Image 1: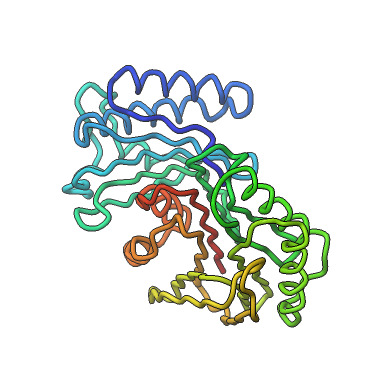
Image 2: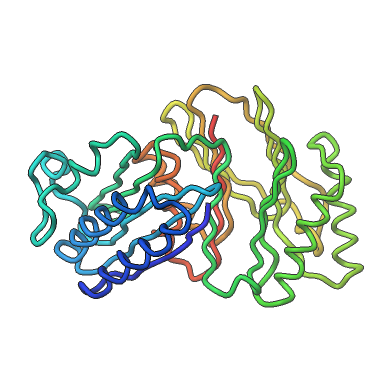
Length: 316
């Protein structure tokens, strides 16, 4: 999942531009979405201007499908039940509001709203048929060509990591690690060999060191192996826990890997993320909401560290 377009909403002109730009984009790819998405942009954008004074609208893409998000850092929706009632609407909007957005046959609407940390509201509209086990959202604060974050998937295995620093060399290292992962056999049973060989390859090619997570998803077990400072948040049966491990850094001071295995159970969610995601913020968000897409979007938006942000969500 990527942020396809991001619109800062501070004036009515910003809102009108977002509506027109999204409409023009969807004409070529998803014309059946135009009517609902443009209606949603006007309703949600008007909410932002009236109650939050400023915020953002994101158009998100996942596997050739699209989601829409409205995000702000105001004081939260004071009475969500009232806001969802029929006939409730913001000034100068169409008079239908969140009720109409939530009562349709093709899209779900999920809402995060809080007066605490993080403070604000995120409203996410997504097609009802979205049902992915792996959800990755990346937001690059610098150009994509200088980002050190990386993610790749091969069969039941995935890799997520962050090369040291920023710039062309960090990006070159990230691309090298992805290619090495995709071209070599990986197993969590022998992951130390994978890390040791990669460690030497990075040194031989004078590339940057990296923090790396390698995961394996089977029918009944999720295994996570890693080097460097790795953070993991699990949410199982509404119990949220923070876990982390640190052991060497590939390409620098590598010793041996750490390995953790978690048994899948019904309604289990796991979140692995780069250092651009605020761990405590991620923990607070995961405790408050259940929808995995909404958690990922909120985590990226409310983590204020000025760094590239990559978050991977794994859902049973």
